Length: 216
Length: 219
Figure 1 (cartoon, one colour):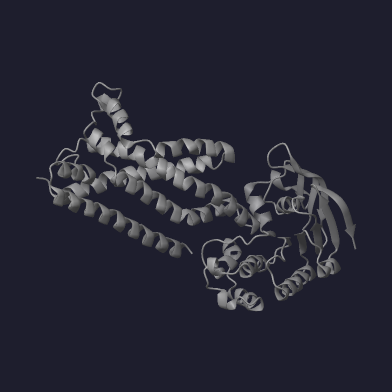
Figure 2: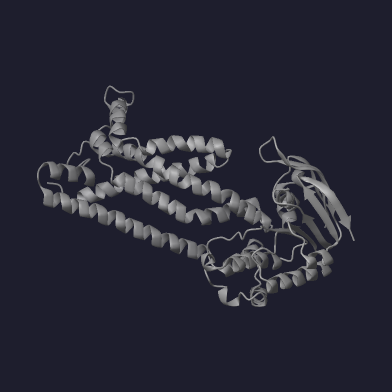
């Protein structure tokens, strides 16, 4: 019987990596979109907004078909491995990270650039100040991506399989214990999940305030 | 320092021009007033003058050189001589002090005594360490203005500088502007309303209507 610590560690590992990749790509997408005219950028953004609402089980099924041994990427052999869960959670987390970050980047970018240039600063200094101003947004974007990833069941179950000792994460463990009638254990795992997301939220908030304070 | 705007046309969307065939020279120290109704193009003109926006057509010559053809390094050096103050307070997250010192920080200069002196003069000393979201509109506007005044630029462009300010601060601002002119600065003020005090102290008044200069008079 797998320990709770093992399940928790695996969840943190898989979801942190998925969220980090989603976060990094969200920054790149937001910065790229911010160079477009508003209307074009909003059109692209609306595609991400649609994907926020796509059922994660659908994403799971599509990935399953891709990674199935006879699928286009079956040769990679990553179905029912933590890597498949990372990819699935990344796809689930990315749209929410982009939609959250983009609007703030778009509005702040021009505002900060104009302010810095108006004070006789350079374009590079404007970028430096923009990054400082974006710290709280980046932190909240990462947190949104992470909480979406770690709370995700559909993808984790379909491409991960919830294999004990290998791909079992908190959400699949909760689903399994509930289906077995072990409600006490399911609630314990649920409590742990909430505690993790709360702790990460508080930690990131404190870290963000500290970074801003240091940079001032 | 001299800035010449030659045949300036500007459009934000590629079809409607907000500025049309503007020709102006800012050469002698003094106070230049740009007056016109809302939407006449005053702010856009100030931003072009302040080297923030590149005009769609025309040349911006700084001491005879086309600014937008210079290297990035040269642009940065030239921009240090010009400061623009927005009509609405434009403050970053942080304290009033942080925002007032922002321009100085961009130049890696410390002027703690000047910051306190200016803040006291404008009645902001006790609000210096307040977060900006707790400042009143008048205090926030004053922070924006002090941030610019501390830099003592050669050209200071002010967009509707008197909005949100009480009479005391308006008088102080006029005194400080006149002081800057005596020290050789060019002050350009955009306003939709000609204040009496302003008319008296101005050297040149330019009226802009629908993006075009309709009247230009010098003293």
